[in-house]
Length: 167
Image (cartoon, rainbow, N blue to C red; front, side, top):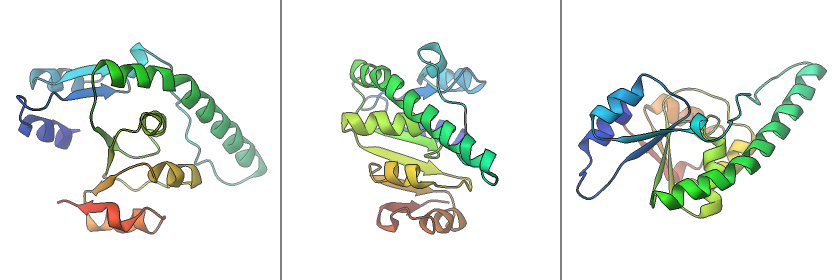
């Protein structure tokens, strides 16, 4: 989050108006707001999925995965009107997902439906499943924090031509 704070602090606020949509209220709200960044929290508007579809193993695990996927699809469908409204209300021109496709799948889905350009910033090692690879096709660029992180995601099928390495 501190890299996001640094990035937003360096923006030309005469030209760009950064808005951060956080999943829930966190300590970063105050930090961002004190830097002149407008913040909103998803949990003030809609109920977001908490489940991780990466459950593995037994038949019970497979059933849980199918149920989790169904939950995520339903919640994407329910949240899309909110995201469309929010993006239009704030005249959003670019979306920066700050961690992963798995954490932001609802936002990626909704933003893709609106046709806005998206950038996804990766700094950790998470599994990219088939649904996330499908969503990744709608992301214009991937920003990786290290060579190891880039290799991890490209080996899982994310397009290397759209990857950018930063240190």
